[in-house]
Length: 323
Image 1 (cartoon, rainbow, N blue to C red):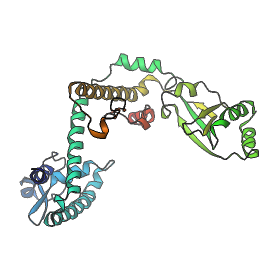
Image 2: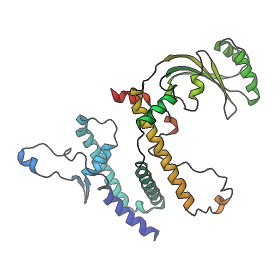
Image 3: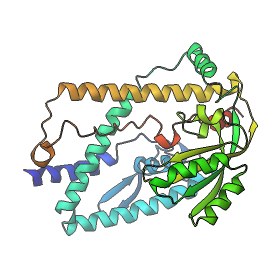
Image 4: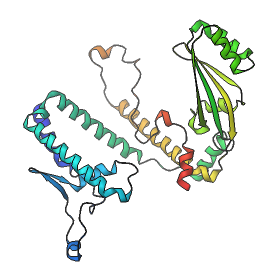
């Protein structure tokens, strides 16, 4: 039964791949000609490889996934993509001839891909129900986060990563507080054979973690922050300098609107998954049954939401969009 399922799935993949996306540029591969040729319907086939056809839909689907592709680059990119699809089709045909597509490893990968694609499509469809924030909500967010907008700054940081033992943290903190300058603190580390590495970075307010921004926003130039990391090592962040670069409401609106919309999509997905879990009968079996109740819940895949690394507002991108 399992083998039959994958044989059907393999056939379905071939058929569905040609119908996944509507054509965006059917004329890409159609040569320019006279009036009679212009009246002929555009072919849906880009190439034939033995008995199999590669459709323009397949070609355009790949082209859509190439960010920043300019119109004048489309013909050359289309030819390059088509050649890749031909090579892929030849490999696929040979794999089917040699029964590689029926190996357990390949069938498991196909099933995993199918689950990922369908579940992600559901979450993306669900996220479309999120409503855009109102002008009043945008204004409220703007006023409630002055460090991001009215009092926005560009920060220059010096980061010192110190290879210290946990028991050294208190003494290092006191030494940092008593040091008149950063160089004095560094000289102390050298004199005591404490290894460290330094780096510099320039960050805008929106590029910092939102939960840390209020703390950083209160820092003055020359002040430092002392952090003990989970592994016991020490991190010192020095605000070497900063400059004011405020953003008014009009210029910030696109970024705020997108940020709030993404947050709504993320919450919508989280609530839906939570409700589905509550209504489903989930039973952990075998080794997974032990301590199942205390195990952390896997994060919800939210394609519409921003990832933790970019959880801040992309104000610069929003501003560029207005230019």
